[in-house]
Length: 186
Image (cartoon, rainbow, N blue to C red):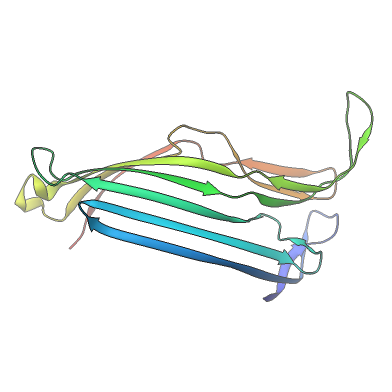
């Protein structure tokens, strides 16, 4: 439980530092390193974060997530030291605030407002790495790596913020993102 949290102030676009928030949930994480040249990372967690002053979930909080990533490194041959990885990330739906009643333009009728829900989404990632020490003993400890997040470039809503007035915002999540790096470990 946490007190004096900034929470929305009714139907206004600002907050007040008077909230009482509590969170219930759990998280489990597992890591298997170098099992037959396969490295596996997995995690799952759930959360129920509530703003006790409004009785609603805390704005911009999701219900949890799950991740799984596996990396296989070739142990022998001309490609020894090359690692290929793939993974999946799932984020559960979340709460974006209280929407206001809106009037549809086509039918001219008032549609009652309600909770704004951010839908859950699933993304896929990939990685390629090369241990330079496998090609030359003088390069031991150096690793080249490239990774791509959101491989299929899925468009998704990652967050919303609505505070009961006609205004509100939603944001797209990260598009496909490729990165490369070189690292040294000792």
